[in-house]
Amino acid sequence: MGRQVITRLPMGDRLWRTGKQVQDRVKGMVMPTMFWEELGFAYMGPFDGHNIHGLETALKQARDYHRKPTFVHVVSTKGKGYLPAEGNAVYFHGVPPKNSTNKDIPTYSEVFARTVLRLAREIPELVAITPAMPEGNYLSIVEAEFPQRVFDVGICEQHAVTFAAGLATQGFIPIVAIYSTFLQRGFDQIIHDVCLQDLPVVFALDRSGIVGDDGKTHQGTFDLSYLTLIPNLIVSAPKDENELQHLLYTAVKAAHPMAVRYPRSAGLGVELDQELHTVPIGKGEILRQGEDVAIIAIGSMVAPAMEAAMGLASQGIEATVVNARFANPLDSELIIDLASRIKRVVTVEENVLRGGFGSAVTALLQQSGKGDIQTKNIGITDEFVGQGPQASLRAEYDLDGPGIIRAVLSLLGNAKSPSSPTRGLKEVLK
Image (cartoon, rainbow, N blue to C red; front, side, top):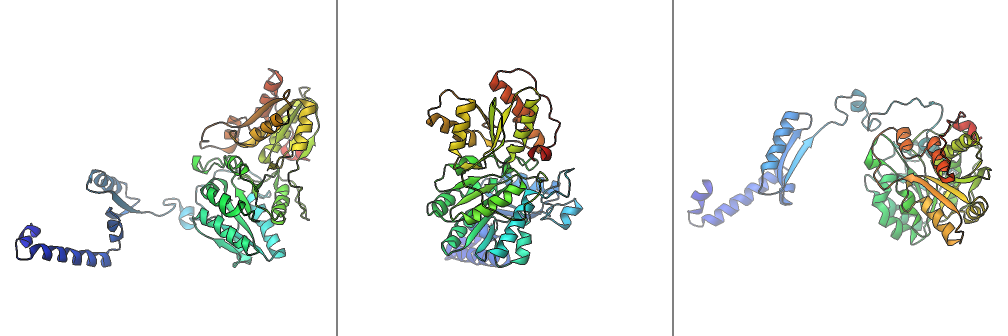
């Protein structure tokens, strides 16, 4: 109505436009939300994110508004209704699952951080970078002692990788501490900014493999596939927390890009060596000898492979178990020699099968001309892993002792049911 009256006056159209501009400028000063309207959105809010009735009303209004896209501003309190999370939203990012793990056994994340702190004291050029994960990967303990050498870049994974590349060109040794699933966002930067230049950047991939209750978005089940295809990048995984510290030391000393992947869990309770040493790059180790089948496992799957070997032995089947350690480069000499003698090879990885560790081993054997070798790859099928306890999900994909036994018996053409191993993992790995 007001517009109709004004535009009928002399120079009414100009008066209306001028008045509208003044109104928008005043509104923009008083309400910074004009930013969204300048981008072409209709703005609604802010709304109380804990008022369900009010939110439903707002969302219905946004749904029914057809003139332009609608930006709905909702304000909520992280952890609302759960007092521990309200008081410490960072630590209680999610409600922690019930855990019966021995509290005296450190997690892989804790061992990682303690090793980085130890190396930082010895190597002035070492720095650590994390994209908004200093508490989750325990880098906060390093930051407390070396605040100028730990960089939290926020949720900017691509920047974390490129920043590390830049620091590496200036003589620093950067460790990019990141969850496996989030490193995917920096894939292009890994290739062009780090590996193309063969820069000495260390990628510490926490939460690799099945993470459990964090759900589909956090499962770190692709890193062996998307990292092993990149030239110049060494890709490794420790069998336990002691080997983790040695692989980290190896990565820092490698003078090349190197990734170390490790799971979200407590360690196996093995003793930690006081002296760090480098691990021969591209070399695995034989943990157990047997002539019936070779089980080649990597990372967190080495312990279940040893468990399976004990169960197979109770059925008269002797298995060689190999801790591969490296997905790239593979220990070609060891793998080809074992396969040539034993003729039956099972690979185990907590990663998707497509393009993963097992497919690389199979390709190696095919290229070697060993056509009479039977192989079976155990890993995650072509799907996104759902939410659930780690043990349950691993069992679903045969990534536990009984599952590996079934796979071996299938390869051998043996229909007997697996018997449950009775020895603990710590005892088995000694």
